[in-house]
Image (cartoon, rainbow, N blue to C red; front, side):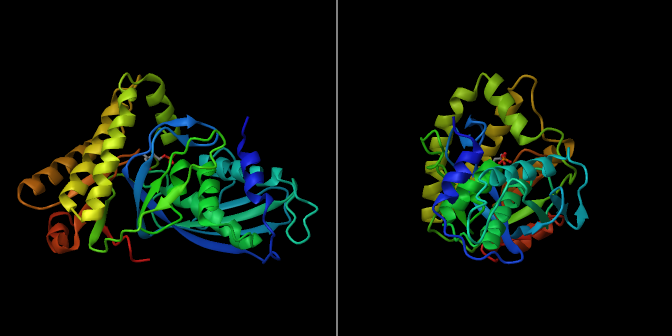
Length: 345
Ligand code: PMV
């Protein structure tokens, strides 16, 4: 059976590490799925049932600084606060990822030995709320693997970093690039063909708006929600073919810069996902009354001629999509949103 540790070992096997520097620092943008990843064919390696497609969030994301330390435990901090509770999901997930690295135990390597005793200091700064369905896990693990690559001088190709990031959190494998990224689901049981691929198209006139309706951590992780949906929804069997059609429509909209097609498809994909979740037993409902009110406001604005669409992940917050030509009007209608330029990094 493939374990995350054996995949890490395979990826690092042919590396000729360069002398370790004191610390590695890297930034990775968060990404928002236009066509969602929902459901795993392998829950250990985070291998998805379908492809998915995302857009990066410009300067919104995570900056991670990592160093080796002489301490009995890893020291993990988030936004300047040292996290001492080992049961926090953020701490648990980073630590188990670092455990995979420790299991590669290459104590005989000349310049960058990692042993089962190696401990790390991981300092992450995120400029978006954590655990609120705002893609914080996507940028967190992507920044972590990039920072490790700098620390150890592995010089891994982005594709390999994408696979490593995926082991921490599925959607993280799309956060190694700016712009549109498709996550190829792959076929192999070891997941070595399941990684992000950047689309060549750029669309600088396309803007995102982050509408934070509730910044608090969500009550149910996307990991658990996914498992429950796949295991209990009578409609999950329809998801793969729905995604296939949506991906086709989104990619052709991107190639033709057809904003109406892009917006209508990404919004319908998100609504399908939330419908699917509500069909799970017991039903999963991430929307709050504020979310529903906001959705009605968006639909009303559209009726009045404003070209604007939304998507929603595993949380109550919304992300809006519009073109820069309508930005002034959007700011008037929706004064609370943070505007993001995906290509400004
Ligand atoms: O990577 P995870 O386990 O945080 O799951 C992400 C799930 C969604 O954000 C809802 C969809 C996606 O494709 O990003």
